[in-house]
Picture 1 (cartoon, helix red, strand yellow):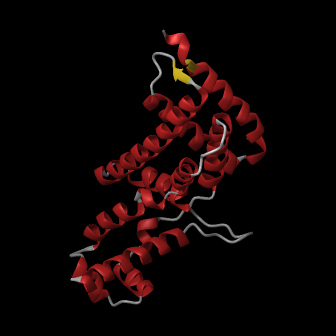
Picture 2 (cartoon, rainbow, N blue to C red):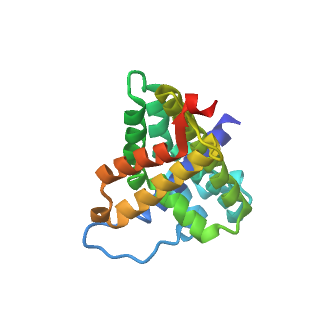
Picture 3 (cartoon, rainbow, N blue to C red):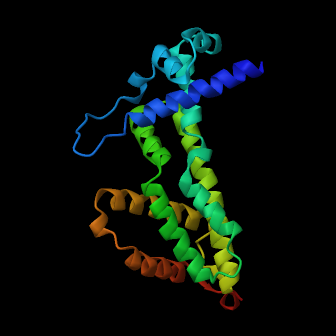
Length: 220
């Protein structure tokens, strides 16, 4: 039983490595858009994992069944560096001013997302297989996790500043906006870095915070 589970993990990790390798293009080398699933044959995945194709077919009846598990593996929230950054900030925020915490969250998550292979893979898989329910389900779970962590950060910011959200804004709606902001900035920074000035973004974050919140005493 343990051997079967171990071989499954090895095969999925090998498939992930092959998929990521499809995006790894050296300087000066041009390459057509990779077809991730084309890389993931039973023979290639097994060889990369150091196993036989028999081990592959002991775990999955066919390639389609394998791809369902691979999508779950590839879209797992645990592969997101940006979510880890927010979690780390929340856990180590003692002594940080609320404004500083918000700014650091935006800047660090933008930088993490730019260099996050999982983020690139998630976008690619969404574009390629968005009609698959398993892709939507796992991406939805990922966004939910990200919104919860950003929501905790927003709540901490408000409490530390002695502020509350103005109607109709809620922790959820602000978290949705912040996640969208980070992803949009990361995409633009990765494509056209000279057009995204993180110092200006700092000012924008403060402006957004001021627009959606008010001192707690004003609500009475």
